[in-house]
Image (cartoon, rainbow, N blue to C red; front, side, top):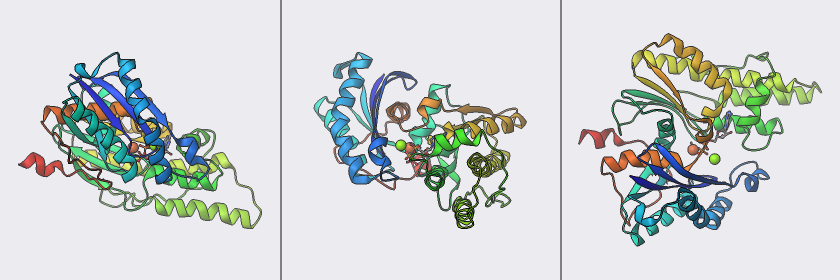
Length: 340
Ligand code: ATP
Ligand code: MG
Ligand code: FE
């Protein structure tokens, strides 16, 4: 089985060719980060234009690198949400066109399911499974009783973890996306500021990062006002310790209520070294749960993860047609699908 898969939900245009849902034949990623940096974040209109400029080159390169032709393909998969509507539409239009012209089935894929399935390139997913999904727009704990079934048991009530990294990075003068650089800086400092760990002791699986972000910004502004200079490494380490503490604590609590075979860490923030280390330590207490860390290179947005998720949708016969549209606020709502 060969799937050509498209991802264009945010600021990466990516097209991959995936074999049997678990082997990458090619994964071409064109990032637009440089174009957005001077604005301090992703500008939707700029993103759409970039996707349009590069999408054709991306799928041609993906096919060439994989050394396959349209005749070899079994389906075309594409992210149709969640994400920026104009950005999503570029991938959706390209995928629909190729599917139509080459008589291939079209597979609509939820971007967040894609992030989870990046783990498929490490090992097969075993159910029941839990995913800690941490990215630029989402922070959630997703329980998967069986393949293709998703239940969000907890999520952020305000900012996503990646968004918080990007916002505090801006205050520190670190350009977008700040997650990687803040992570690196954090490893050279200590948690001296003891920022709040919001909702850590509450009996639910939800998160909140806006209070932490405000505490961080207030600390920096106050120091500016009184002309005090703060240790940047300690600031980064303190912020990261607060984020990681809450993510790890809530995950551990979730695993006690929902015993699973695997815990999957995925999404852009899953590249965080501090989080990967702390989660690995914490998981020692869950002897019968395997920790699966999404490969570092596949934590950020990419077409390969969409192909892995697309393969599962393909097997379940979840096809789309020419009426497929972008769904910017798409959610996991397949608990009902499964119950049908
Ligand atoms: P979503 O997947 O929710 O739609 P997105 O696709 O924009 O949002 P991703 O591309 O999955 O988000 O992840 C990007 C985010 O990951 C950015 O906020 C970035 O700062 C963050 N990030 C990347 N590397 C790290 C890291 N090492 N530590 C913390 N955050 C990181
Ligand atoms: Mg991105
Ligand atoms: Fe993403």
